[in-house]
Image 1: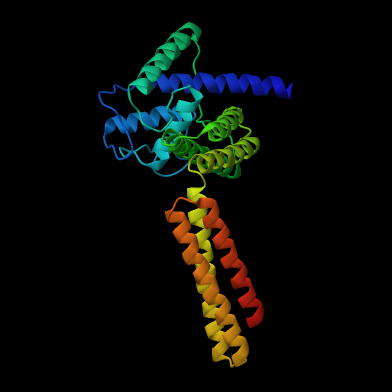
Image 2 (image 1 turned 60 degrees about the vertical axis):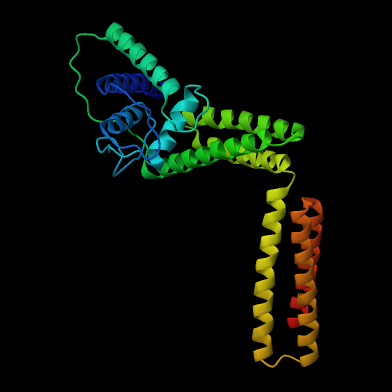
Amino acid sequence: MTKKLFKILFIFTILIISLSAQASTCNFTRDLEYGSEGEDVRCLQQYLNNAGYYVAYSGDGSLGNETIYFKQKTENALILWQIANSISPAEGYFGSKSMQKYYELIAASATTSSSTTTDTTTTTTTTTSTSDDEDNEEKDETGDKINSVINMINDAQDEIDDSDSVTKAEKELSRARAKLFDAMSSYIDQDYSNALSFAEDSYTKAQNAYNYADGGKSEAKETIEGIEDDLDDAQNDLDDAIDDDIDDDDADDAQAKLDKAQDKIDDAWDAYDDEDYDGAETYANKASDYIDDALDIID
């Protein structure tokens, strides 16, 4: 009985959304993107909210509080709508492909609503969201993660396009897209926990694809910069230890280790400049070993 009631309520809710979306039909005369301003942006936000791709759950952009400003939340909601409607690329740009799909959906909605309209008085209490605040936060978090996945996939594809040897990267990116599809399917089913898990997996695979395509360049740079930070911290620790009257021989030994670490970091950057990213990481890791040795002396 409960399941039956839920299905009836679900169908009723879809009908309300369909009628609301029809009521907010927009006349788009230009492409919309991040930074756009105008009543057409407000109308797009109204459509997205009514279609279940909420720009926000409260405040600016939420249902009944749509604005004329196309910012990050509008872009996020639009990306989810584009993915759900197989619009590629799903980048949050409302251009000709999105407009065409929008008008198709509006036309289909009008046909459906006219064929199912009965002489019924509808007493509608706004029921656009039956989730509690916690569910909304989870949905927001999942939507944001999916958006970051899309950006990572696009970055990886750009890197692949600019690279010569990309077979491994392409395979990993294909896996990332498959996981993104799983994430979107779960998101549409309102299974936000699984959607978030799939999205995180997709992001990792897309990031791997990016790293494969750039030959480890970004990873090597990140490693070197991280170890440089470790070296700075270790030098500060040594300076503090000297102020606290550490044994002179220990201080000299620790400083010698840190000096060697700096030499290896310099070697790492030289290898990086020569596009030897594996060698750069090897030098950086040797620098890290010297830093650890210095810290052991200080401690």
